[in-house]
Each structure stands twice: as structure tokens, then as C-alpha cells.
Length: 271
Length: 282
Image (cartoon, rainbow over all chains, first blue to last red; front, side):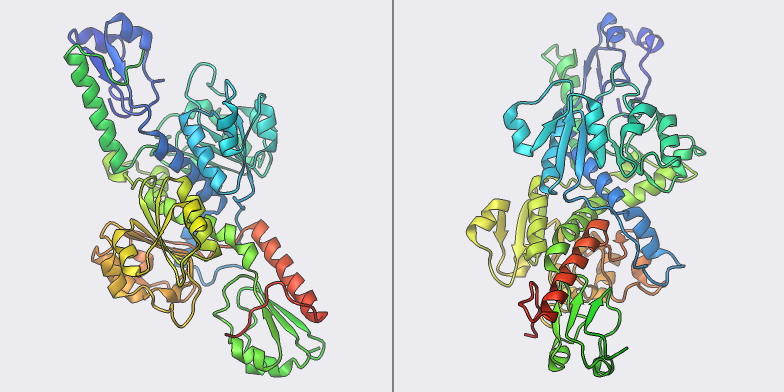
């Protein structure tokens, strides 16, 4: 299964009596009804760890591209109307700025490792606090209340998985707690953010900018306001989109399928 | 008025410091530059008028290193290209066509391991990149060890192994056209050249040829010669090139820090005290 297709519902499952396994690409399984699949005796696998580094890399790329205005800068550099580069054209400094990571799992932690090298101050919010050694290795400070993270961060990066608890985790209230100079980066799932509230917040300068690898739906309708806003970068869910990683994902998926068909223990089974 | 001018704070190479200007400002004591590069100044000429010079080396390093990494990541993951696809009015694209290159675990070759080059190494290490470097002199063992960098005495060996070649040298007669046809041909056909130093360090025509014929894979240039490029320049048309408007130090914070450094140097010069970052004609 790639990019959530086909849609796995009761109809489909009823029509495939011999289906043994759904091997899903990537780590997220929010698009699958696990109870339903279990009731049909169908196993589920994902590709959890291999996507982490590329997704963390992309999170950093989005943050850097947004802060340093790379897309705008490129357009200026190649535009037929450009005669000179204005002296007062400035971006925001990353080194020394505060990054708030919401969701400090494997991906969130890899982002922290990278951000530390950029001399960033790191705050994080997570269901549970990480071990002291893990925190000090990246200089990350735990914010038990998400409000504390939102109020202090220059960049807020979302790397949670999508669950009923994280659905619309970032809404009007959370956006209003953020600094007006802050940037929201989303590499998790579109539904973690209240998208309408985000549009309003960006239009009214409640926050400064957003960089989104994920939206709801994907892709957005072509007339969606997010596509028009100058202070938004959108990428088409490319978190794991490198040749190397996609190859390994495919290998892992076929490995899981082969194991399931042979009745053997399934690597990366989701229970 | 011209007799009153004692100091010039040079912002983006303006005004042009030539003999005429120097002759017209008899009481000029110091020129402080907004940035670290001094290639736009005739150091000997300025010194011959008894005018001191200063640059701003400390303020620029982190911002420029950040910009170098930004260019590397944005190029590798094709961010500009796919952003345009994501917002375009048609959504016809094939998922397999937008794959990028994995940065983590790739080999970065840093040409010029000064303050900025070293900060790049620190950042790249966090991305689990393998780091090679070429420099006029070798760094101390602890410095190499701290970033896991391997010294390449010959630039060739760096060029042959690197997936990303990052050019971070100052522009001098020795580094002009440092990267030419020969160097580009030594690079891997899948490699990316990133230039955050000066346009003139790269033989631009050779670069265009190399990109057009697949001798190297891509380029990301914050600097060109001239800036901006003429609007019909081939580099602006190539799909595998990102160009940015010399934004290495263009952040709110860096601008502030550069000005602070410049003011410190100016005040020191005017009081006859040692200057924190004086630049002497070598």
C-alpha cells in the first residue's frame, strides 16, 4: 500500500477472502482501521524506522528554507524583472533561535540532534519525558504543558503521530499562544493542525509563516487559500522521498508480505 | 563635508573605494566592511593612504554556515521544485518523479575549512554525513576529530569522493577559478556543487557546460559573477540549479552583529587603539 491507496474498508475486505496482509509504506497507520482488519484476520505491517532520518532531514530543510526565505530568494534570483538584490531583504536567523518540538519520538529526536548542531535552543513536548541522558545529549528542555513550548518557540515543529488525541492538536488557541514571529513546521499529518484556523492565523499575522509537508487532504484543492499565501511553503508529502529510502521501504514491505504468506513472524507487524 | 569624514562603513560594496574617493577624503582613518570578504577592496591602495581596514569575521560564520546547509538540503530534496508542483494549478505529477537524494550518510566535501567551513562541518556531522575537507593547512587533530572530518591534501581526492561539494574559501588570486572544467570532471556525475564563497571562485562557463552535459548532477549557488546575473544567463534556465540572492548573511541578527563589529573597529581605529578585526594588506 502506497499513499493510502487503495482505501481499505469493509467492502474491500469482504471482496478479498484470501487477503492475508496489508503492508503499508511509511510509519503512519492512521489511515487504517486496525480493529476492522483484525476482525477479518488480516495482518498489518509498516516501515517504521527507515523513514526517520529522511523525515527529520526534511523537517530541517523546511525550517531552513522558510527562515532564510529560500523559495522567495530563488524566485528573485531568477525573475526576469530583477535588476538588483535589495539591501534590506532579510531572513530570520536559525542559529541561536528556539525550536519547540512537539512529539519527541524517533523522528522528533533526530530533528533535535540536527538542530543542536545549528546552535538552537531546544524545547520539547511529549506524552512522557525522555531520559535525562537523552535530553542532555541534545540539550532539550521538557515542557510538560504545550503552552510553555508554544509561547517561547521561534520555530514549532510537529512530529507526533495522528491519533484521536492529536487530532487538531494545533488549533486557534495554540496558534494564538505562539509568537507573532514564529513559524509552524508540520511533518506529521495534516489533521494534527486545524487547517482553517491556520489559514486565519497566517492571514492575520498571528504567526509569521508555515512550512507544511502534510495537509488535509493531500493534495489540497487547487483554490485552497494555503496555496496562495506568500508566507507558506508546501511540499507534497516527501518526508521519505529519497531513492535510497524508498528502495529499502519496498524491500521491507515485500519482506513482511513474504513472511505473512509463509506463516512466519512478520517483521514490522503492527498490532 | 569631505574633510569631516573619518570612517566609512561599507555596506554591500558601496561606495566603491577607488583612488578618487580616497583622495577626496583627507581625514579618512578607517573603512569597516559589512561582512568577511574583502575581495572588492584594493587593500594595498587603501593602506597607501594610511587608512585602516576591518572586516566582520565573527558575525557572519553561523548565518553563512546555516545558509550553506539550507542550500544543500533544499537542493538534495528538490524543495523548490516540489513546492512549485504542490502549489501549481495542475496536479499532474508522478510520485516516483519527485524523489530526492538522501542527505544523511552521504559524503560532504568542504573546500575551505575556515570559521565558516568548520561550522558547516559541525552541522553536517549531526546529519550523519561523512566529511572530507581540503584547506591550505590541515586543522588540529582534535578539531578534525570533533567533526569526524578527513583531510584531503589534494583537492582531487575530495572531488572524486564527495556527493556534495561545498565551496567556502575566500576569494584570492589563488582561489579564482579554483573550480574549473578539470575539477568538475573529477566530481561524481551525481554530485552537487554548492557555492557560498564568491562567484569568481567557480569558472561559471565551465559550470554551465558541466550541468548541461551531466558531468555533475546539480548546483546550488548563493553567489555568482556578476550579482545578479544577466537575465538571459543559462544558469537561470537550468532545472538542476538553485540560485539565491547572496543571502548568506542576510538575517536580522547577523546584520545587527555585523554592524556592532564594524562600530567596534571604527571606534578603536579613531581612538588609536588596536582593532578587533583589522585586515592588513598581505
